[in-house]
Image (cartoon, rainbow, N blue to C red; front, top):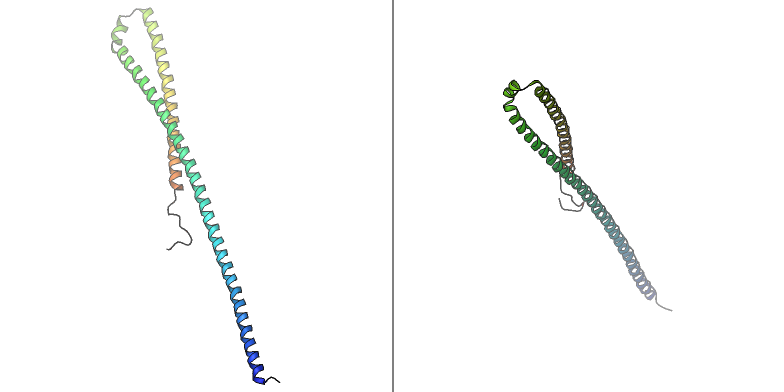
Length: 175
């Protein structure tokens, strides 16, 4: 018969082996859980980073669209300014010509015959009508330029309001 101590020793060795095997299996389970948690954290970080990249891309697209609109407005304003400058130059030329024509007008009227006076009155009326028409067109064009300038100011205010006030930060960045 095998002594009782041998059974106890065998049982103790079996218990130690079972405990060690259980310890090892539990360690592997916890290791797997730790790796799964790390993987989930990495997936969350990746999703956050992906969203941040998409947000920045959308912001950049909006900024590019606003910049394009701003540049188009600038081009329209420059064209409108050229038109206004041309109209003002025409008006200056016309005004200078009228100033010259009117310089000796009282003396010419006093010396003119009746048919010449009628023709002169008709010509003056046509000139004044042309001046009135040009003045109206110039006023309309000035109103268009003012509307364009108002639109430009509104675009600039919109771009200023849309510009980010604080730098974008990562949720994992140090404070």
